[in-house]
Image (cartoon, rainbow, N blue to C red; front, side, top):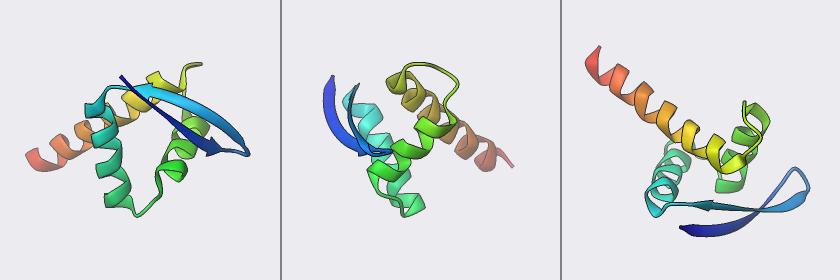
Length: 73
């Protein structure tokens, strides 16, 4: 697990994720042109779970699912 601290919505928070999830989030930021903080802020604003780390994992899964769907089309 890698733990990173970010400032989102005016407060500091820490997120612990496996390195593979951090790598995927970095790919998402590169593709979208967002900073990591902006991406996590967006995930935080739209999450359906109380846990931000879980919400980040779900966001990565959905991103890959969208890519797979596009590739199959």
